[in-house]
Image 1 (cartoon, rainbow, N blue to C red):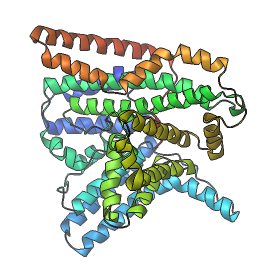
Image 2 (cartoon, one colour):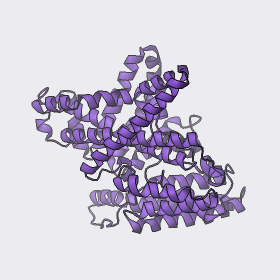
Image 3 (cartoon, helix red, strand yellow):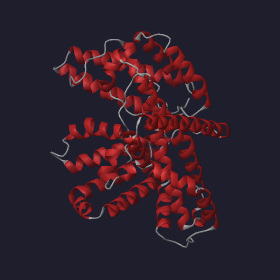
Image 4 (cartoon, rainbow, N blue to C red):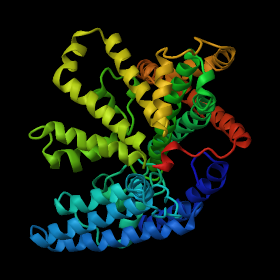
Length: 469
């Protein structure tokens, strides 16, 4: 099940709200949320819920062992074992075929590939539970002694499938003591609708156009068509990823949970370092706190640490060499900025720094999109005029003008322009104008819901891109 589906919006979610608010008792509400979360996950693939439950059981008992023996060698051994088990589960389901395929290629063997699919969200909930046991080991959070509460943290459907990677420390108190206010509930609705706008109206539409160009015959692709295709994919991937996070944050707020922001207008960044402070913040902070700093951070072996972290970041996104290249690509730019580029970027006008960043990001999405590395490199060649591809063609001209409004609206929405305008109106307005602005927001939300519903009726299944990670 996905948030941007009619089944979720008009059946699952309303029924969940009704059942949840029948009682004000948090124990009852926790049980209701847990039941709905497990049902949500089992909706599409009931078999893989056993993987989720197994992971929860294993980490629950090992966390108890770690806490019981805190400060001793037994605690460290228990941590090593449980993290190894967690990573092995990802390895078996997500990376087995990748390693076997490469072994077969290098050694000319014929080892069979796995016929088991990839459990949705395994990378997200595994990282969540790893952060929990590590924090218990570090004594940053108290161990959770009630299994169903740990399972609730791990399986909350708001952020189970595609993040953000919520840490136990951020919601530990809210599991027992959350309070839902009308203002928070209203805020949650606004974020849910905003995410729906991003996903259904912008990301899905941009994705259709991007696929039209990126999956076409490269020999017939025009240079401007190639640029338009990868820019539309740049739009799609941001609004798809951030749209899910908005919906997760909004849903959480309606049920009394406050999740940290996961995207902070990354396309207004002026450096790669700034970009990764704004893009998928929960993932980059996870690697910083649980990999980069333990390796030594910037105190020792800085270059090695950066390469390891960004290779793992790329590999986390998918079991394919193009994702590893994509991660290393960013690692190299971060190193260049550290040693010499940052000084030049600070001296240059902000517009040039922004152009530099967007070129890096757009080219990076080429590596991210094309699992066939040779095709990706050929596509980059077309972008910069290599070969005999025409500058433009009728296909580019038609699609560009057909989608010009979407294109402009998406660019504006990827900046905080609308947010700043609304903030200024709200801060300087009297009560009547302020109330009027609230009515405008309600009307806008209703319009977005209606448009999204109409589009969803006519669309085929379009899951969020991060589901496959």
